[in-house]
Length: 173
Image (cartoon, rainbow, N blue to C red; front, side):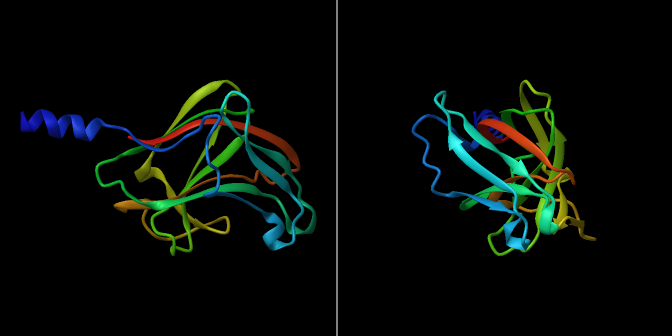
């Protein structure tokens, strides 16, 4: 019986966020390239179907070039988890999916994936998330931590472009 409990516990998903029509977005915030002088614009809203919509316009003027959303939460243990799953409907563009292991860590662990334009689940092996700071790869190990406290999505494809990403769920597996 104990082995069965451990097996079930290991495979239980841990939701980071399940969007719906009454979702509270107060721990989510937008960070665009305006922090560096850029003029990109984006927003995060809940649509009538209850999905989050991260959309906007990335612009390159004034050293700009990115838009992002971040979600801060109480630290979650990931020592028994191996993947991050994001159910979304993209627009065929590439996005960076990012985590931080503590709120004080200055860099993020990043995984880049191109969306298909259809509803899909992006499955991200945590150990394949690479450390980056301000777009530069760091010479330290890939994600090998036991916790996370921030999740983010960033678009910055070095070109001016509109974007729209529908997000349904974000889970640890």
